[in-house]
Length: 202
Image 1 (cartoon, rainbow, N blue to C red):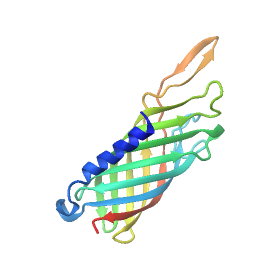
Image 2: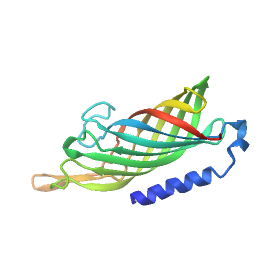
Image 3: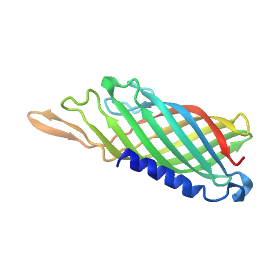
Image 4: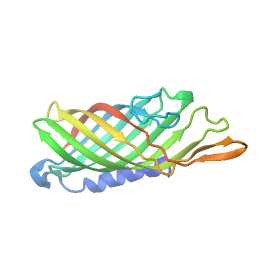
């Protein structure tokens, strides 16, 4: 799956989803938000713990959009580039889109659950040395977002995501002269903090 194909898919889905007039949605709460976050992720690769802030974190920016169809249902898309702070030059990136559901609202505070699908890219430490790799994989990721509306158009937000890369297989290692394959998948997870702006409706 190429990065270009994923970006085209994100744009196509968002265009189709926005075809409905936001003012005709239930409750008049439809809207298009876009923004950015800084993300810190446990890459899972080269880390024996799944705790978000264990091991050497990957850090980088995230671009996002949210489309709210009605009072509870919406969709989210994100592009995340975790290219900083990686051990041995390790990087990860992902391009994901999926539905989200508001589980709580009180005043200007909102809490959402989401399920994202898309592609993930990884460059393992010290690539292209022997025993390293660079590739792309299918990703699905449940998660949650909390946000607070500072104004009707500006919101601050925090996000947690637990990713599954089921088809990932690490480079083989050797024991007693025999190759040992590592096909257990990958489960990066982490947090993002940022800000979003409401573009539509005016």
